[in-house]
Length: 261
Image (cartoon, rainbow, N blue to C red):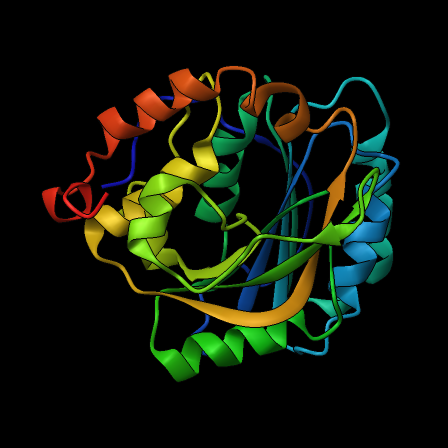
């Protein structure tokens, strides 16, 4: 069940199109979380607009950016590109809430059952949405992810691989830049806020807890920006041991996997 803890209602900075949920299975809502990414967000949005998949909605949530003018840049971009999308929406948290709460808020406002999640400093290849959507439909799974390529301060292929539950209990190798069913997100209770980090890992482990099917598409379709101020670089690895303990507490490893170690 989705966590219904109280949170301030976000402001609507831009809205265009029909928000009603559509029965069209091709319809995909792209979720973008922004926090002071004025230098990168337009590149991100341009990559979404350039998708070959035709039936897209776009929901961007700004997590109360105060250090740059990224919200106004997003508004201007949406005004210019609104006709590309079935529905275009820009929300802003009235107080900073972090990535988990921001993603949950954005997804709650999505009109499509199929969603794709990304952060505003990353980009996607032109065929990413189309290929992941086709993969999701073909496999009958509830989520699909691809290989990523890192760019920015480091250039290398990501660590994504075939979905392996035993390996996932050891470490996370699946980025949150992925496509999934909104119903699956709701079934696991959405994203959980974990003060120390690793919310993405926790999210995928909740899929395992619920026995939800996930499929890997072995193509490089997503680009992950590596830079000095990223959450991963500055926070997630500071308390690696403590985070492992938190994950084991929240998601105990089944005995059959413990026995295989």
